[in-house]
Image 1 (cartoon, helix red, strand yellow):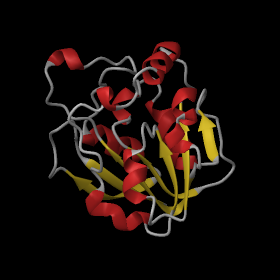
Image 2 (cartoon, helix red, strand yellow):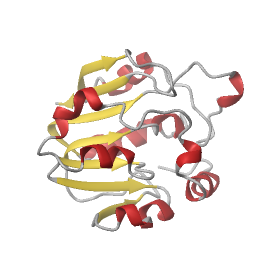
Image 3 (cartoon, rainbow, N blue to C red):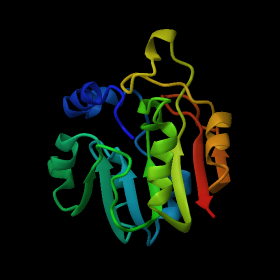
Image 4 (cartoon, rainbow, N blue to C red):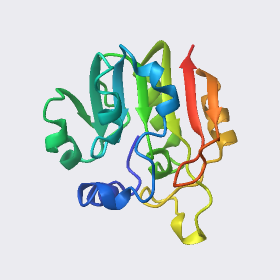
Length: 192
């Protein structure tokens, strides 16, 4: 399923999806866990202008991307990436699994009515013993920054995320040392 406010979300992420939407977020919040990328076949969901890819591209064995915006997928930065999926429903499928599935500053743009389907999409594309890596939303902004509409920030606490994923993944990292600058906790889970 993916339908809630989809056209508005596509419009937002197709028009100015680069730096103006990044705020003060660090480009590689996962840098302390880069070892998980070495030699890995990787899927990034919501890749934007490629900040995460730029950090890990030299150490991965393969890279694929998925996004709700066709404009993002067509951006010049992704010209050499052949495995791309335009997400219109969470039933979309690459037809293969990856060693790492990751997304950064994406979870807070997933409305609550879709979050379980979103995670099932990610988990389905993850190999057994593969790693799911992402950051939780930063919850310290003024109240006007939050709305469950897929554009502004949906509030998800680390506890909610752990509860959602515990059926499929073992949490091996929940790192809150860099909370702030738009970054919540770093989550790294291993698929059973």
